[in-house]
Amino acid sequence: MRLEVWVFLLALAGIVAFQILTGEINTKGLLCGNGKAMKKSGPVSPARVQLLVSTLGMAFYYLGQVMTDPTHGLPDVPASWPAVLSGSHAIYLGGKAYARWLGKAK
Image: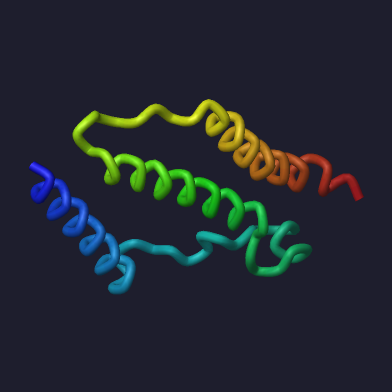
């Protein structure tokens, strides 16, 4: 079973990587802001970067926990994670709301 899971995950990662490289999955603008926010902060949005990094960091940490001891099922999610992830999303959405409603007030 363990070998089958590894083969599945590696095949899935390979398919996604191949589609990103061939352009089937469009990643243009993934980390870029739009409108006035893009003009102010440049082509890369810091809020989008921190949201992506925090989400992927937590996902890979949890995957590492699963892989270290797969015999006991899924490990518990640390109690602080929902708050940290919610805070990360709140920063992103707060920036979007500010740019939409208060950014036009000038």
